[in-house]
Image: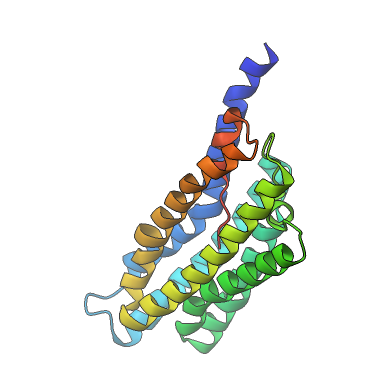
Length: 216
C-alpha cells in the first residue's frame, strides 16, 4: 500500500524537478523570441536580449523558491546555477552585452567539471553532494564513476558552448540550448544507466536518475 501510494508522488516530484531545472531556459527562449526584431540586429536586438535575460533571472529565482516549497530542498547545484544566472545576467543587463549570459554556461560547466574531477582524483564522489541525491542501491564505486563521467561531459559541453557561441547568432544559440544541449544531456544520462545497474542501482531507481540529471 505504501509503495503504491508513493509511486504517483515520485512521478510528480520527477516532473517538478524537470520544470525547476529547465523552465527558466524555456522562459528565456520564449521572451527573447517574442521581442526579437526580424533582422536580429541593432537596438531592437539588444532590447530583446535584455528582456530575455531579465525574464531568465526572475524565472531562475522562482524555480529556486518552488524547489524549496514543493520539494523541500534546494540542491547545491541549483544554488550555484541560480547565483551564476543572476550574476552573469546582471552583467548582461547592466553592460547591454549578450556575451555575459552566453559565457555563463561555459563558466558553470567548467566549474562543475573541475569540482567533480578533482573529487574523483581524491576518491570522493562529489556529484552525490551537488545533487543531494540518493540513488537506491548504487555503490560508492558507481557514484565515483558517475562523477567522473559527468565531469568529463561537463568539459565537453563547455567546449561545445564556446564553439556554438562563436558560430551562431544569439537567437540560434538560445535555440541550441533547448534543442541541442537538453537532448544531449538526457541522452548522456540515459547512457549511464547500464553502468549504474552494474554497480547496484535498483531498477526502481532508474526514473530518479532520469528525472534529475545534473544541469547548468
